Length: 447
Image (cartoon, rainbow, N blue to C red):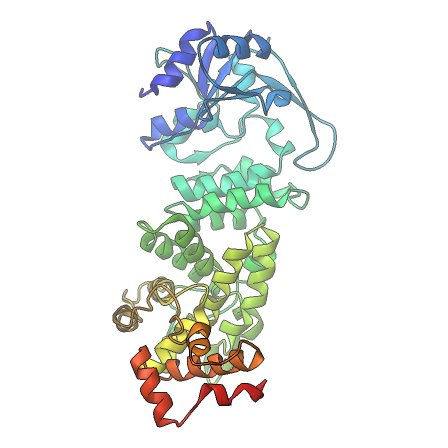
């Protein structure tokens, strides 16, 4: 086992200390993990804090009330704790350290068997609940009946399924179906959805929620919403969405985290307008206007799961424009105006979303319907954002115009002309203005 040197040093300081949870799981799965959690048995937290400080570690006691110390801002060191249910929801627990708890009893309080593993300083793994076996067969199995006390575990199952390509045991699924997620704080909900978006198999997480009857309403409405088999042989809108998020994950492998989040949630929400717009017309199922209709249910869904506002703002225009190619080729003017409409997202992201959507219709051929548009936007230097205005207020001030409402009106007119392709640099603007016989200082009464 590849125990990090700093963690090894901490383990060697205490007689009964073990690495627990995700690090051990990921070591067995052969995937990298930077988070290390150490649990110390038979030792009070105050003594652990003193020993670590004496050995030169920086100890942050911010989680001390819950039996947790943050060491060097990298490693969580804790003592076992008992959690007693005293109320409803994710926060309805009373927690108190229990230094006399055994390794097995401490493992039993963890959510899934794969997270109940513990590893001591010489690399020996303690597996009291067959967690290794469940990892090997890709099964999410609850560790104990206490699993059902914390509804956040439903969403943890979702993101584990997405990240590790796992399925949930029917008994655990039954427990999840009985849980009430309505009391969960938004910040915890978003933390799990964010991890979902980082997985290679996001459809697995969606199917898990569906099997547990815990899909958010807007996604549940996609189930059974018909699509015409000519264009969508794969099935209903939910099935299509599952294919699309998997394609988005494939395309997002090398994207920065923020771009990946935008792409995955745009893929998840891109057809939320279909349930309200789908009709059988002229022998075909059609969803006219579903792009625009999808903005509001997407906003409601994303706000409810705690998504940040910047993400909601970036996803909305992508949903509206995700079928822009259906209208035929765009002129240069159209490309520039599309870039403006997509702000704060961009044509590069739209290209990826359109490809994920196009490829999410097996067995139809893969490809990118906006490949040509992306190339043009790259040449026009607007692949990553809208065009920047060529004419600024300082240019008009230099010509003698005073700041005020009239200047704002005139700058807007110049930007519209720029988007129309009337000019693409300052010299072009000067020539265009002369041809238009326009004197900016004579327009100050427009405001």
